Every structure is written in structure tokens, then in C-alpha cells.
Image (cartoon, rainbow, N blue to C red; front, side, top):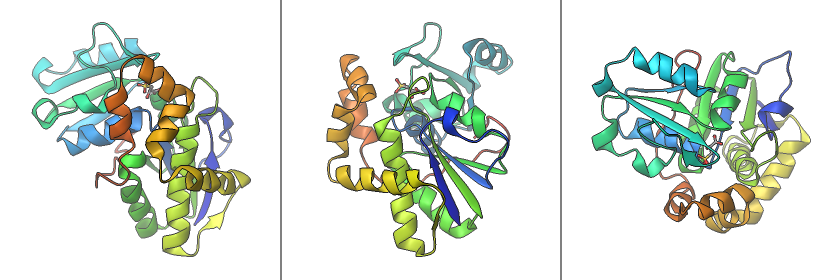
Length: 238
Ligand code: 3SL
């Protein structure tokens, strides 16, 4: 298994795809997706634009759907939810489809959605992603961070490093595809005992703190707390 890490969707190669893509948006899209599925959502359908989300979700029975929209960290007017994983309770999610559009995470998913296998990961389900990769042994794996509007995000790269670090330790045969893998592992090791401190330091964590999302940051820092793995069933549906 050869692992490549790309800090943002914009930095991923354009004329090729991996056997397996792992999309990460720790704060907060892929944390929310894992939480929604763990809480019993029937599926999560992702959209890069809100207009399409509204059109497609309109074709579903209102009782069987939830619409989640986030821009700039805040909930989009007209949606049922923003992008807080804490809103994804079993009461709300059970048997419903979550239609979601976020600033960066859903765009990152779209970038690699044609890969034969697409999974999503965050700190909360890091080990579930590692177990899947160790079991399936895809030849090439891209771990893609969502970043923020084209720029690098500390927390996504640290999560990519957390996955690569565990793969290296637990498989003993992971090949390093690019220098970003080495850098990401070093970054994760620097913060592994204080993930919440990292979220308080990074720019998107600070943006979320200004929006009073302290509890979200604590939840997102709970490494390996959920044994659930979102796997793409068809493009944009997990
Ligand atoms: O950028 C994204 O996709 C979101 O996860 C951002 S936020 O955490 O909901 O603000």
C-alpha cells in the first residue's frame, strides 16, 4: 500500500485517481458525517452547492430527510441544521437521509468521488479508517484534506498524519508516496496528546470558537471514539 497525502483538494493530481481516497474535514464535515451515520441516518448525501441540495432533497418526503447547510461556519437559513456533529442525535437521524453542503468538506469529496473506493475520516473514526485500509490493502491511497477555501488546514493534515502513523505502525509495510506523509506524521506526533489545544490554535478552530462552538471542538478531538466508517455507495452518497 502506497500512501500519498494532499493538504487540499486543489493540490491533488488532476489526471489520475487512487484505488482508495480518504477525505478528511476534521472541523467539521467528516466528523458530522460519521456521527450522523453512527446515529442511524439512512445515508448522507453531499452537495457542493446549496441550490442542488434543495432541488434534490425536495424530491424526498419531508419526514425522511434533514437538510444541513453551512457557510463560513454558520448555519444556512432555510436548512434544518448547520454542520454541528452535536446536532446528529439518534432521535433526529434515525432512518432519515442527511442532505449536506459545507464550505470545503463536500467540495473535497467531489474532487475524488470517481475513485473506485471513497471513505471519509476524522479524528473520531481514525482507527475505523485504518482498520478498513489494513483489511482492503488498496495499492494506492490518497488522503485528502479539505483545507479552507483553497488553503492548508492544520487539523486536516494532522488527521492525515494520524492515519498514516497508525498504518505505518500497524501494517509495517506502508510505502510513503510523498513528502507530505512524513510531514503530516511529524505534525500529528507534535499534537497527539493535545488535539484540543491544536483545535484552539488553528485558524478554523478559532473561527468556530468565535461562533461559540467550544463543545464541537471537544467532540471533534475525541480520537477513535466512534467505530463507524462512511463508505461512498455511489458518487456523493455515503
Ligand atoms: O468547511 C467545511 O466543510 C466545514 O466543515 C466547515 S465548519 O466546521 O462547518 O465551519
